Amino acid sequence: MITLEQLLASRDARATHQQALLTAWPGHTLICLTVQFPGPVKRCASSLVVGGAGLAALLDKFGSVVRHAQVRDLETGYEAYLVVPLPALLVKKTCCQIEDTHPLGRLMDIDVLEAPGHLLDRASLGLPPRRCLLCDQPARYCMRARTHSQEELLLKIERMVADFT
Image (cartoon, rainbow, N blue to C red):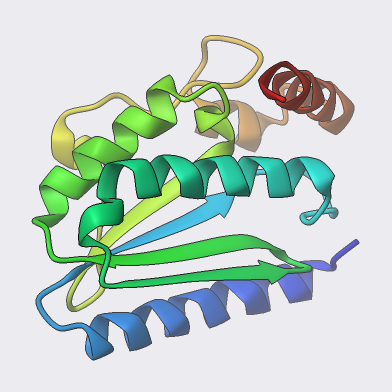
């Protein structure tokens, strides 16, 4: 289990690492995969399955052009970084397709950044916000309103992972 302070520190560390990679690879696009799990446990067998599946999907799409790849299996969650020499909008479109079509894609957060750390979002492609795991509302709405219990969400996640494996 992690604390809120650990979670916030990990976000800061991830942002610093992203900037370091963008600086080290000028003119390249950075892909950052993290796993979305509610609650204080961010590293477990299921999160590692999701992270591994996400990395495999990314390597399937971009493996032939990856210039740098790194996986960080942290207590605060799985992180994977890929540096590619492709236009960021093209990369983001492909990453959104993975998030939208992969059986575990809803549990993946695939960020695409370009120097100087500009993060592309779904709106930049004209795509709607991601939907909740349990209902048809935008995920952000349900997260903020705490529409569903952590137990409901974790049960759904475990079913998704079990169906995938």
